[in-house]
Length: 506
Image (cartoon, rainbow, N blue to C red):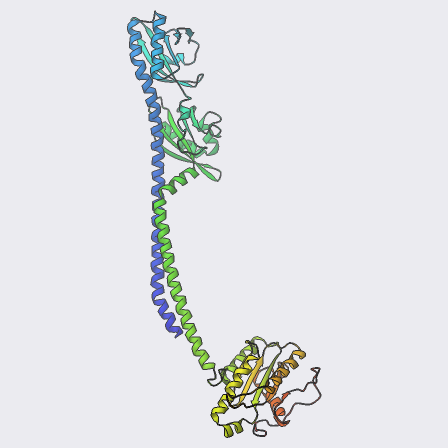
């Protein structure tokens, strides 16, 4: 039956295991692909965000330029001799373009401000760049601003309309953007010099004012890659190994002056975005794994339940095979087997073996009938099993012979106590429902392992005790080695007579 069960289990368990392995491998592969796709999507999104910031900055600069263009045309047409008129036009630019500082400067560096005041720009570092500038945008270190320049060139006036875009506006670009507090966005030139900063101002990457130099101090290879790709006008991202973490720089060209916008984020931010994008995939994978685990658990429960049922059936059959049908006690084979098993496992644990033989049982059968004799045996088996522990071994080993093996009787006091318990039991034992019959028994006792280290020897010793009890007149208990009231063995030698013959109708 066990072999059949194992074969049946293997028939469905092996295909199930193979199927689960295949599904798990597919899930792992699918998860990896989904993770790569999510990472690629996050990377593209970050690059797109940087380009969006760049387009926003260019849009603001172009808006200022679009306001300055008609005003520069008016200055070229009307001339700049009337300082009040020039100041009026500059005020129009300031209000329309939303900038606080607007100047008109001639070719000698003499400028007029919003209020008509005269300003000398000839000593300013950026003045020298005006004449040779190829772009309308010039960064001014002193005022941390970008000049949006329009040339004024006519017979009436020669000079420059200068509109100052403050980089303070740039610093607000990441405000409420959803990025971590440690993220930042910088505008850098081709040498990595930081022209504008939005976000984390306390980052070690921005403290010295040059992004490429700061990255080079952390990861030289990443710095070379970032510098090269920025100089080539590329867009993308570079991972910087910063100790146990990876920092990510996303860059895109602004489209003018070889300036680039660079966004810094930590790997924790990217991981969260990847997890967010993969949430549906992850939920599906988790649900599928739960379904697989549930299926496996159901299979295991069915298998275990089947084994329990099989074991219960097997135990039921074993119990039936071990049970004496008349008394419900262990039969002879079961009694001997269980005692031998205990002896093998507990070779040094002192125990007791009783052999009980009902006195004059043949007369009971002859005078009162076999049915009444069976009732006596049935009642004896039921009552005697109640006075011992559940762990003790009680069995019917012959027609009217019973055997009791008491486990772990440690002291002589307990030996005498258990012997007295058995004797006392038979003083009050009665059988029969209508006719009460007082049955007695002769009892032989042997001590394990002193009087027998194996079952056969111990049985013979107990049988010697039984022979003594029969010889002395029945209805009593006798030890193989006699003991006094204190439990001390007496000098009387064990009986050596042949006990194979009955004594007085044993």
